[in-house]
Amino acid sequence: MRTYGDACAVASALDLIGDRWALLIVRELLFGPKRFSDLRTGLPRIAPNRLSQRLRDLEEYGVVRRRTLGPTVGAQVFALSEWGRDFEGVLGELGQWGRRSPFRDLDAHLSVDSLMLALSGDVRPLADTPAQVGYELRFGNDRIHVHVAGNRIEVTRHEGGHPDVAVDTDVRTFTALLTRAQSIPDAVEAGRLAIKGDPGLLQQLLDAVPRPEPAADRDSSHTVAQPPGELR
Image 1 (cartoon, helix red, strand yellow):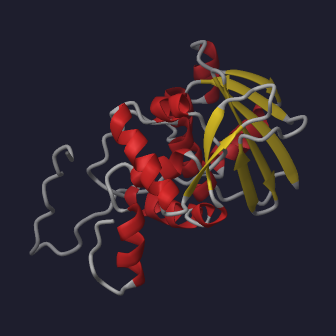
Image 2 (cartoon, rainbow, N blue to C red; image 1 turned 135 degrees about the horizontal axis):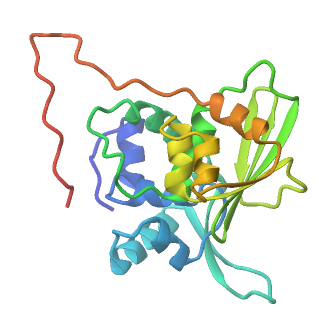
């Protein structure tokens, strides 16, 4: 293991998950186990050999566990350990900080899991929202279950029973809805959004996600740095 040789707990954490792609692999596993091919779908720019190495490292550190699904499926999947799942709050806070970056490329690739991390980290249920609402968000074959109860939100790939609202869409369209770049009626008319249930409940979920303002340089004596190039 490469190490900073620093007793600080932050440095110790970075010894384990500070390598390139490691944090994003953790992000892709937050809402449930995935096969290797599913991870490649969520992280299309990582080389297969690099993904394999990062998974081996995270397994060795006890952050990720490898297991086999039931005998009728037999697929090998990767899942976060209990300790690894503790990283969800850290990623949520990091995402909230990063969403204010003036250098974000909003046209770049966005995975379903990164979109759901933003939703689970940012949503602030409104006062007039029903006590409990269940949503099923379908992105092709990927189904995400969102359960809002009071001021709490739970996002998971586990079956969520009978949802109050079922939505069929794609990541780019749902992102446009979240950022107010497109309205529900416009997305439906364009054929990029189908809703089963009350569209008003979907609108309430979208309204509960504030739109962050980019950070500004408050000190005029300093110049904001130019955005970094692609990391290698």
